[in-house]
Length: 361
Image 1 (cartoon, rainbow, N blue to C red):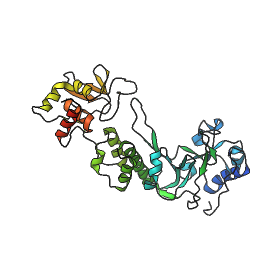
Image 2: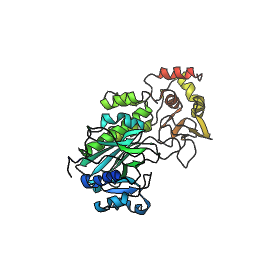
Image 3: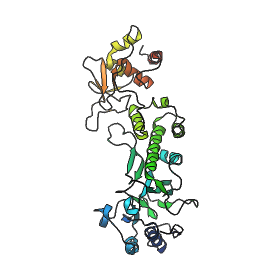
Image 4: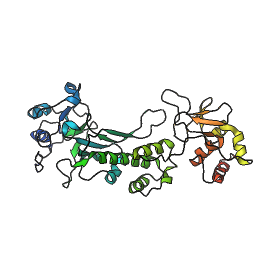
């Protein structure tokens, strides 16, 4: 590989699927100068072409066959990881990742994208131990098994569609027009890159679930977001952030939470029972004896196949448990979760004020 070699110009034609000499020169340059293992994809698609779809991860194209293989107007894919000299792709799947990437990812990426999502892919050459792929998803919505994709780190066993290709939505996939970027992906420590992508994923979760949105995520990136500021987030979000940060859990402990004992308003709330409080604070009885959504994890149902409400109530009516996140409590803690976002408010009089505002007391 010649680090000073200049790639051929991208084709000027609006339809890059045309079998132009410029287009084939560029694809051939990928193999000759960067040593990338190329993969023919469906025309205007991301999947491997039908003739290579079976066992595509083991497909190897000789340089002599590059021009004939891509002469038919198919999209261009590259096999990531070991086949292409440890080439890895940080795929920024959501708008939050695009906004925050520069705060986390190393400089020197070779970036590409399309008009509506420029710089949505950042290529690097990974050094050190072999790098495994990473997928960061948002918390699944009610009744769903998987959440929306936030950011990926693709390596061996994965492939990425690269320029010059046509995205399934009809847009051209192009290298970023930035003369300061290198012609070849810059080498970065693989373990450090993975760590950065994990933190980027955590910041995306903060941006999506914190009331301050991107401002909170930027504070998280600079280390100025107080640990306590995360405690108001749903438990499932807090747990995911802690997992990505490899940090001690910042979530509220999932143990049975009892409110202070005594007479007066607390005793009156306890006397209402869990079902009475659930109805008063606006939860919905999904089926008799089950309620949703859980104020701790936001799941409405127990699972994709179990359509009962996430919250179940003890037979004596005094306690409850979420079957999705395992949070438990009594009638007063349920009211605190729903109205204040925490089972243990710093000042219980805040809960009393919230209950009075709702007309419950």
